[in-house]
Image (cartoon, rainbow, N blue to C red; front, top):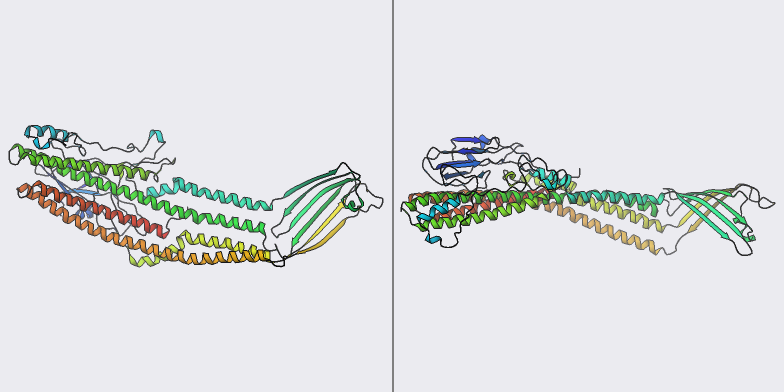
Length: 615
């Protein structure tokens, strides 16, 4: 298809294009083929591949900012504006291309002098008595058709909602990158996942508390009985990372002690004591205190791949919601433009009825078709609004409040790019490095390794030593002053369970769990490779499906255009035209669904690669 006139989108202002002959206008818009670079094709390079809409009567087009994205291994590039063009036809026709559109059309006015500003809503009751209409009532019915249906805005044009906090200034189409950036910055479930770092930090601090300096105090007094004694003690214990303990303190023992407890007695000033205990076998390299710190440190590191796994899922869900919203906008524009065709025919058929060229039931049948297509338009509007609200869960403002994107900011599908099979194998190897599941298993294995070391530690006998020094001060309690000199004590201790079944049972348990993790890791590696291959196959086949669906749209529209031309020449009827148009609509919707599957597959491929990393 050639193009005689190119109209670029400027300043977001509507531009009216009227053909040379009265009652004929055409607008072409679309995208060029898949871009191989980061920038989209120039508007001048897109004209030949653009779908075309040719409508009777003057037509006012609302330019819509389109976008193009290069999708490569889950990454996107930023778009350029689309171009619009029109061309003059030598004969009046009603050709309409139903390919997924890159723009929105305003329905043509029935009055040639004043075009409408949007799709129309039939407010008349056509459910009963439609067949009895005559030429006198046609004017009243068609006058009601001229009432324009407003496009509802889900949020104001400036992007602010008074009762929901400040919204960002939305001045262009909402891109997938905008949604993903919002998920990274303000998605509540991701914020909750990040708070697991705080929980893990608390566990680390708690585990380190086993090495806190401990203060001890004791007061024992016997106030009744033959021997009245009064003992007070205060001291400290400081565990060390080598498994030993420093300890020290001060005690006072006063009163009359029995001869077998004279060591509890001190001089008048009391006694100072300090010592150190150290293990030589069990608890030398690891003990429950150090094991708890090690496991808490591993759990803190294990939080990171867990958060990344959640992030990958959130971005994938956001991609689903975004592309569903884009597809709903495409289907809405298809429904709006097919309604334009039926409404445009109403005026021509009405004139022919008034001139007696055709029977009034032809007009009634077309009015029925208009009503059905208006109902379809409302259904498309409902889905478009529902998907917008679903998308708002992931698209949020600076305060974290959901932003419902306006319908006019919905972009078209960007160009599709074929999957490069040579890159799939490299992507599989990259996914094994990026995906967090393997890191999760590795950290779990390290935690089990600590458990194994603790179990093996219990197999060893306890063999330890201690050294202690003490010094009494003050007046002696006995004439011998046996507590006056500095005392130094050294000792050894030994303990071992002969059967040691508790330790051996723990070792068997931990070794079994580690073997399970080894087998699980092999399966996870295989699953990651399989998921990448599966997602790549989905992208490849979805691309081929979308290409074939586009061809089906071209064929269906060509047949519909011929049937409309035959209707003008009197060689066809309205029933055949409506059937051909219906087939064209179905083909266009299937093309939208095929593109939706393609971009959902791209979201799956991004998730399979594990491309989203923690900031």
